[in-house]
Image (tube, rainbow, N blue to C red; front, top):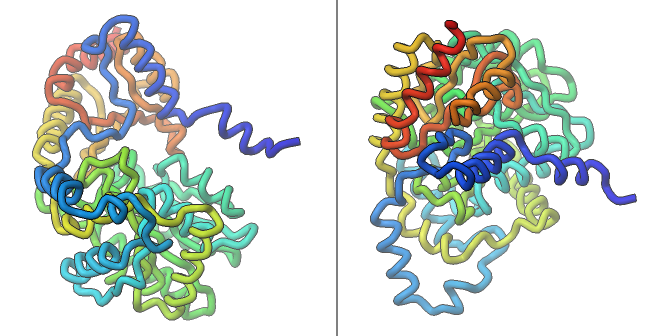
Length: 394
């Protein structure tokens, strides 16, 4: 018999992917402009001009064998050094190239990191709402995911609840800020309190790693600060992706950064390299490693996402919806008018609105609206949102 867990995972896609596939079929039936697809976090904003310019330069001037050939397993040294320098410059740290492991996006970063850290039965605490694949990644690494609900209304970490969830089997806490699906940015106070709890555990003899999943770090509005965890806790690892910041989701490029102040940094980095080897996640795409070495400091234009957020928040609030105002990412968390968010998301389909029920994110009573779409689609969708709200009033 083949692995039945893998059969189940392959037979049933994630809720997000299922809705996206439904949307593709529906668009073929009634026309793309008539379906309001808020399912997938697929950036609609083009990559910054510097990305295109540097790619053309690389392809025009570099040796094709070098551009398309293998790099070192953990990534090209020049790329890793550029990433380390970017982090050092922005967050006053002292990483070297040997603290960086280049990956095929944040999913690979998380899978490698969890496989590097976990032994069978180890527990990973995460804060709900959370990205559904965290459970898949953790369980495949032999661990157990332990969701802890964030504070009601704000979805900031509930520090008392996290403290209560820690057991002798707790190996890591996995956070995601700006958060998918809520768009919430964890405050400096929240991060300080969380790190204080983990430091207290360390002083009592239990090392708990803090893993920060950061594909949305640069997507923040109004100057909101996203605390960098290495400045607050030494036993920390950052999993990063350029999918959102540089609008390159299909190119699969990211990295793992191991805090140089970690008391066993060399061992953890070796475990990362070993896990990458065992999983086959070696030598991230060479072309895009060359690109990142040149554009590590390039920032995205978030103005379109900010306008989309403001338009949706104002309109949906006026229609009577309750929303969690996001400070980052490109997701809006909307309270369902009925207790069952699955039923609400299903009713939304009648108005050609594709909204993701939050049950798969570990909370009840919300849907996620992914607003990384064109402003035109936002405008065209508003009558449908209004009609959906009216259907509950009637």
